[in-house]
Length: 286
Image 1 (tube, helix red, strand yellow):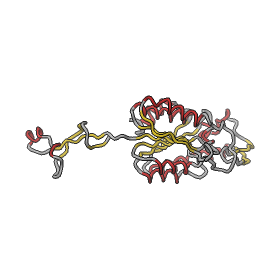
Image 2: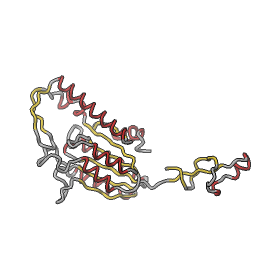
Image 3: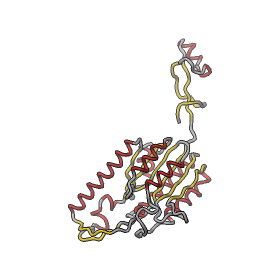
Image 4: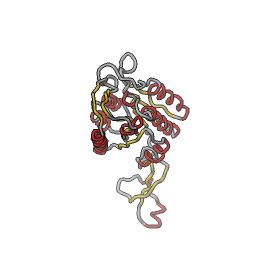
C-alpha cells in the first residue's frame, strides 16, 4: 500500500495550493479555521515473483537443500495466492537445460487466486524436485544449464510491473552472482529478497557424515565434474569456515549496496519459523 487515491483514509496533512479541493475536510476547517487535506491509502496490484535454483549444488546436503527450497517456494506462493496477489515462478539451473533449447530455466506465468494453488504446486514439484539430479555429478561443460547470473538476467529483462522478487538459492555459482543481481537491481520496480540456503554440513563440515570428514579425500564438484585431492585437517576446516563466512558476508554487503535483502537459512530450519519469524521480520511477509 502507498499513499494515493482510494477510499481508505489514513491521515491529514496541511493544505498546499493546487491540492484537490474535494479532499479538504471542511469540518476540521470549521473547528480550527485551518485547511487540512485528507490523505488516503492506495492499494497496488503487486506481483510476487519466485526464482528457485534447482542446480546440482542445490540437490545436496542433509536435509536436502533443494527439497527445503522447493517447500519454501511453495509456501510463499501459497501465501501470495490466498491473498489474491499475482504469483509467478521461475525454476532455473538444471544441468543440460530443459527441452530441446537447453535454456536451463522454466517460467510459470503469473497465476492468481486460491484455485491456482494446485497448478503452482505441481509446477514446483515436477520441475524442481521431480526432475532433480539426485546428487549425481553433472556431465558436459561447466555452467551448462546452471548459470545463475544468466537466469537472473533473463528474469530481469522479461518481468513487468511492480512487486516482490524472491530468489531462493545457495548462491554457490562458479560464474558468480553479481551480474545477475545487478540486472535485477537495474530493472527496478521490484523489492528483491535473496534467501540463501546452505546445509548444516556446508556450515559445519566437521559434523558431516557423523564427523568423519577428515584425512585424504577426493572431492568432486557436482556441477562441473572436476575433482581435487584434498587432505582435510582441523586447520583446513577452520580456514574453510572462515572463507565461507567471508563469502556470506560479501553477499550480504552486495545485497545491501543494491537495496536488496539477504537472509541466510539452513536447510534444517523449521519452515514455520522461517515464514512467521525470519521472513516476517525481513518484511517479505506482512
